[in-house]
Image 1: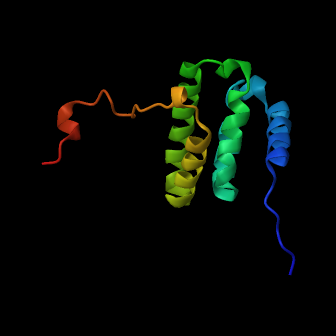
Image 2: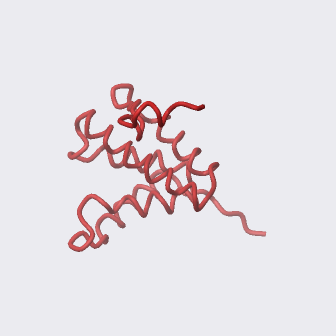
Length: 124
């Protein structure tokens, strides 16, 4: 029986570059190519989501901690949406792979419902 080897980091980065180059930026936008990649990785190789994050933060548009925090928020939102399709385990594994490579100054401790009235947050 043939064994399947997991892709290396170098192979994953080469794939990210190829997808970024071929993504239809004119119709879908410059900054959206990594979202379908993220969703595909969560289902197949959730550990490589950290590799995707590392690749993205090497780009000039993610030079500042604020831009990297916004990126993580966007990736977290996509991962939460993947829970309805894939269940909890793989998106959580993907999130942990980001946390492993995240710089301390880039950590974002906000949550989606920060502006919710306190009545929404209490359990009665």
